[in-house]
Image (tube, rainbow, N blue to C red; front, side, top):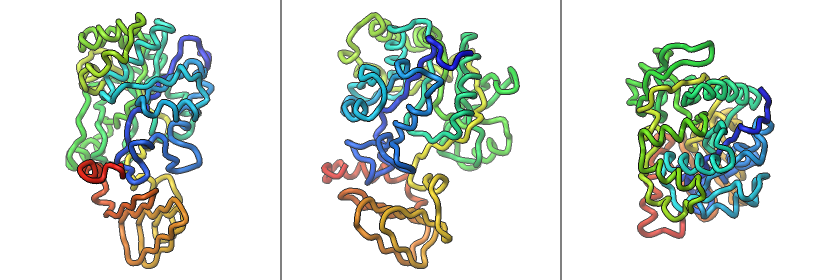
Length: 350
């Protein structure tokens, strides 16, 4: 299979807000525009790792309309390939729009759908995994990439693997919601479950038929958009629903291909522990930081502000712009909740 086929397209979903990364992540600078673990933004990395598997002119990015100018200035893609959603409506409407826009260009396309904010290494094995998935998608299957769990995590949905098709691919038995700790431990011990990383591969015509079968109202919009209709006029009318709920959990011919690559969704400040260096006390430190008698912390300062830390353990202390976050790492999932509180009286800080 050629690495740059005319029919292979990729669509990067980059509309999220990244509120879990406050104070670095703001309404004008979401997670995918942050430089969290190196000198590149996450959206830059997500696009670059698709080369040379997919040609630049066949890569689309769908983001929120308010990030459109930043994305177009940042990415080495044709400006018309970076599309702004009028508002976030979850992944099913995003994918319907992607299918329509790809279908305008090439109704015989095979589409790779992937999030903008994951860390994936190495690129060679990422490409190899995608090529396995493309091969299966060309049989008319809806294909998802399954990540082998490295822990009994409760923050991800799981894929229960069914009958094996070949050494790298199985039928999907079922999709599982984010589990409680006991269930996550069962899934992890079983060995027949994979994390759902939100990476999909299918033919444009296959996903279009799936929308017609399971989400007919959205399929009508997809058909209109593909025919040249103005998606900005009625995108906001789409049901707000994920592709998992809308289609993947209901469809029959769904396959899962094992990821050969290392994966991290970088979903919170604590996730940086696995991708950034730590000192001898387990602290991740960036910027001007002095820590005494402190361990297992995330300590970040984005300017000349000096963070002095004494006797702190298992905490995130992050200074970014005009905001400072201090919280136990055990409570960091509540950062999103904190940002909601800011909407009441502190909107200039979000």
